[in-house]
Structure formats: C-alpha cells, structure tokens
View 1: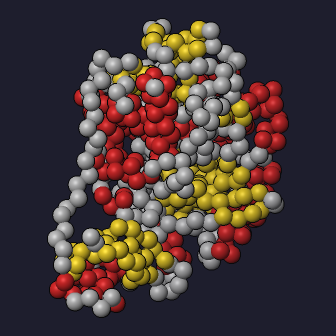
View 2: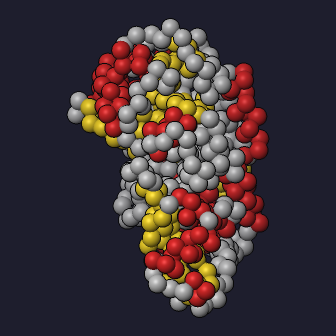
View 3: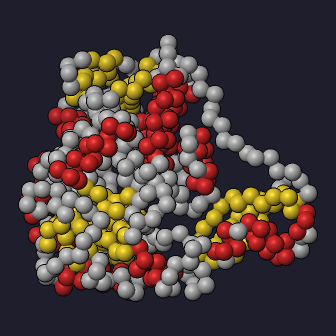
Length: 519
C-alpha cells in the first residue's frame, strides 16, 4: 500500500519529479532508491508569503510497483427499449442526468433548443462580429450549456451535495486531463470542453438514448396535475411520465411559461455587477509579489469578498489569462461573461465583480410576481444595450473613473471584441448598486494593493451569475410540489451553481426517477 504524505515545496520542486523525489527522501529519511513512484494526489498554491509554496498530497510507492490507474467509464447498458425520460436542456445537469438514466436502465431523450457544440461556434462569431444574437444558440444556449464556451471551471464548494470525485472521474473518462482530479481549482478550458461534451453525446446515443437539437419546448402536457410530456415549437408532442427540467439560468421563456400556466415558481436573490479586466502580468505581480511570474507558476487568479453598506460585494468566475465575451441571449440586451483557454495564456485576466441582491430590491417590478428579479435583471441589460448604441458594444469605464464618478475620456483596448462605449456606470445601475461598486473597489484596493488602477476597465453588466427564479421541488422526491413527474433541476431551477454542482444535481434527479419507476 502506498504511504500518503503532505509536503510543502517550492514551485520548481513541485514541477520537477526527480527533484521532488530527492526532497521527499531527505525530509522523510527514506532511501531515494526505495521510492519507486510518487503520485501527486492533490496540489494547491500558497501565495500568502513572498516565498510562494506549493502544497502537495503525495502517495509514495516504497519498494512497491506502481500500476498506472486508468479511469474507466461505467458499463452503460443499452436502453433503446427502456422507458423514456424527457430531459429539457443539454447543459451539465441535463447531460449527466442522461448518463445516470442510462446507467440505471432508463432511456433519456434530451431536447435542446440550441445547436451542437460545433455549430454553436458560428453563432458565437455572429454575436462578436455582426452584433446578431441567435436566441436559441449563443453562449448560454446549445449543447453543453453556458459552461462549454464560458470557461469550464470545475471548482465547487458544494461537496455536501454529492460525489464530486465521481463527476471528475466521468469527465476524465470522456477525455478531460487527469489533472482536474489533482488541482485544488480544476479547469478544463473553453478550447477543450467541446470535444468532451461531444464524447458524452456520442455515448448517450450509442447506448440508445436520443439527443435532439434545434428543438425548443414551448409547453407542457399536464393531465390532472401530472406531467405527460412536452410540446415543441413545431407543434409536435413528446410523451413521457417523467420530465427533468434542466434549462439553465437564462431560459426566461420557460420561466414565463411556468408563470403563465400558474405552476408555482419563486423569485430568488442573485448578484449583479460588472466584469473587470486587468493585464494578467499585473495580477501576477500583485498576487505573486514579484515583477515576473516564475515559469513554474500558473497565471494567478484572485478572490475577494467585502461587505459594503451591509451587502456582499465579491469576485465571481475569475478568469486568469482569459477574455471577456458577449453573452446576450436575445437581441436588445448586453450581457458579459468571461472565459479562459486551457493554458490560460491570454495577456489579460478578468473577473465578475458583483453585488449581492435581495428580494426587496425587486419591488419596482412587483407586478411581475415571482418574475420580478428576472425583469430587474433584464431592465439593466436593456439599458446597457441602449447606452452601447443598440449594438453589442459594452458600456465601459476605467476603474479609477468609476470610483470618482466621471466618464472616462478614453478607454484602452480590452479583450471584449464587439467594442466599448465610455459611460458613467450610474446610467446603467440603480444608485444602491452604483454606490456599492464605487466604495467596494476602494475596499478591494486595500486587500490587493494596486488593484484600483486606471488601466483596469469595468464592463457592464455581469448579470447572469445565477438564476433569478427558483422552481420549487420536494426535498426528498425532488418532484415539483404541484406537478407530479416534473423534476426541476440544476442551475436554472436554483439548485446548482456551476458545472460540477449542476452535474451532481442532474444525477440526483435521475436517481429519484429511477427510485420511483423501479422501486
């Protein structure tokens, strides 16, 4: 059996295995020749002091042969003739629900309004180049969901919700690097995730499941408060006793449909703000406390949380070595998000900097009932559209000017390709958000000296942090309390916050259905 040890080493020692082996032998009084293999189990960076250290958890094979461990996918059965389960949405919740359905002997039919991963690319280019938004195929809608082309971060704090390692193992089985099981903040990258998503789809179809693209659900078949399937935009009906609703946090038409049909939904607090871009070299200098980042260190992220006027203001979805992208889901709105390639090798970094919202903030939109938060969100996105000249040009302001409340006389070029329009952020946000941002960035600068610089640019708005609606469900059965057989799932329903937690929730819904159908 291997021996597990924890050790702190320099970045160079952590990277060069022969050096690491010598260090481990010396510190643990083990003859170096007796160590047959060192397996890195976990890795994290400690950059709190000037001399940066790497924390490692190692498995030492001493006088013992090491056999390479391969990650195998489950032995999925063929479910062609099994009872079908409708899954609305091909994001991580929907895809992992489908895989788990197959594993449990049920046939998933995924209905996705958008296109497959390859075809989505053309629509993403059209947003950037032509300022044209395809309402069914964009950064949020399409195979793989929002995460496919907006970074592929796998870090989650939701470890109590389910087996994180199981999801990571499955991703490795479908082509992700095993490094995602080692790093404290794993990341696949927007350039690599599409191939993994395509492999998942291929497996679903090979095992008898189905994946339908360009098919938007416009209604639910409900009989005696029990789901009987869905109706598609061409009028066709798909029948099933169980429907998993995994449409993502931006499916406003689904929220509107539920409200119209008097199916219970609830307004949910979320967060909203700007996306701030610095040069990656600048962030490295602040975080690593050095002029030049060592070749043995990755581009540095950052994480800041502050309380400003009694509200949380914090960094969200920080993208080292990444770019800012236009993520609107319909014409007439501007939305920002960020992503990084797998190597995180772009010259810029960005992060959402958002302000905590509360239900009482949505009172001006109270006439919309549980959709009040959604309309609050949409109103800010529409303001941004008008301020940008009714294009995908984003309202922007130098960070120092934002704090001082003045319009920037000039703006540096940023990674946001559709272009920038210089504005006062007070014209985008309600006063309470604007004032918190102005004070909060000054507080950020106290934690990260130099963060508040005129070269940093705020882009508005960062508004799709999470769903503004929660679709309630029973805590045990996971069914909607009003509609039997309807399973609200994932981030759009208010039960997840990223790829991993959404995948876990998808699996949980599949398991709940199998428990009912198979006993």
